[in-house]
Image 1 (cartoon, rainbow, N blue to C red):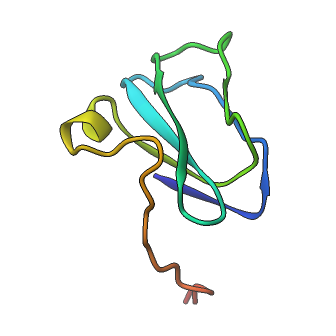
Image 2 (tube, helix red, strand yellow; image 1 turned 30 degrees about the horizontal axis):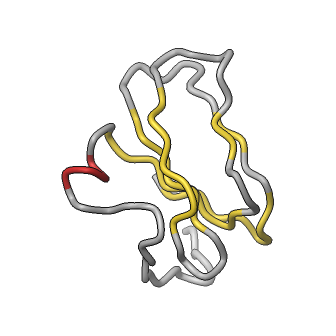
Length: 87
């Protein structure tokens, strides 16, 4: 799941009510991964905090980043639809 914020900020995530292990990548406004953290299911006491202001957070199944050679410092290139039309 990709979380997109209007402006870069320090982001905080937790795993309340999430039953599967995930990893989260915090990504700055330039698309550079600034942190990758493993998240433990159902933990509400440990927050996952971006070390610097981030504009994006990408959650994936735990281990996906390592299995695909994605690491801190890598740059993601993606296009976002500026607006969604709901009918």
